[in-house]
Image 1 (cartoon, rainbow, N blue to C red):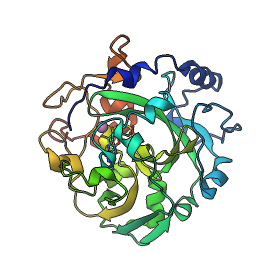
Image 2 (image 1 turned 60 degrees about the horizontal axis):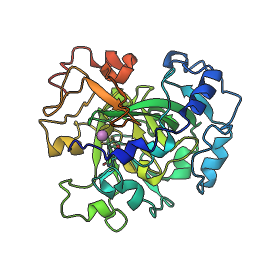
Image 3 (image 1 turned 30 degrees about the vertical axis):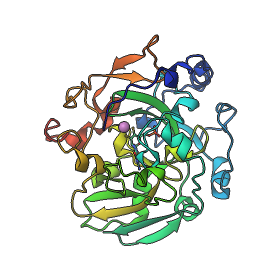
Length: 335
Ligand SMILES: Nc1nc2c(c(=O)[nH]1)N[C@H]1C(S)=C(S)[C@@H](COP(=O)(O)O)O[C@H]1N2
Ligand SMILES: [Mo]
């Protein structure tokens, strides 16, 4: 993965956006509920009350609309860190299926239709199956999780996702005792994904990611179907993507068509491309530098030349509750 200096325009136009609106609402709602309180949290009694007014409205599938009424808003938050404006989160993207530059996905995914869409769940499971999105989401209660997203390229955002726990989805499939890892695959469709037609791409499609089963079952591991109170825009991985907030962004695979429970550690896309630079674990870690740049700090977007928003990177991206997953593991060796 190349590290790219974003054009100044990518960030500077956002300097005047009313982040304060989000922030004050969130303060008002008493944001900062930690994960520890997640299980005991009652459903908040307000809906998307205009917090996401700046978000383009889109045609939402019936199953999504039906579920919006009972979303548990702000089930997980990040305390008083500002939510990244929607226009940054939806226009500054990594999604190589739609091109290698940050502005490519929003441009090239504009016509990408995600209905119909099916997801195959297979491998070491008692109940394999192919589900359309309505059936996949049907048993799930949607919740909002406001998570930090830290890219390996040393920038970060704070994004309010809508979705459900990966663990809940996996439990329904009934993993067998042989299942040790989860492997995810993105759609391959060169006609609809221009980046897959490019002779310059080094990626061997499909884009693949993986988690150890215990990582996948951690309550923070999330399947997103929406963000900012709406369905996911195509450039952010519609209709279904993974979000693993304590790992570098490349683990959060987009536009998933297949989830397989497997016995052996999957080889993920970036590891296959450059194994000395990108590993399987990819836990955010300020003490383990990328061979070509430091991981000690990050630019929290929006950030510009004149108003750089640089902060210290935290171990596991600040999600300390995952630390026990890695006790006894040498994080320098298993980067
Ligand atoms: N299929 C697929 N998933 C992907 C990528 C990709 O190129 N293809 N890029 C990853 C990277 S590097 C990052 S940082 C995040 C970016 O997510 P966002 O554009 O929603 O912020 O998506 C990840 N998921
Ligand atoms: Mo990334």
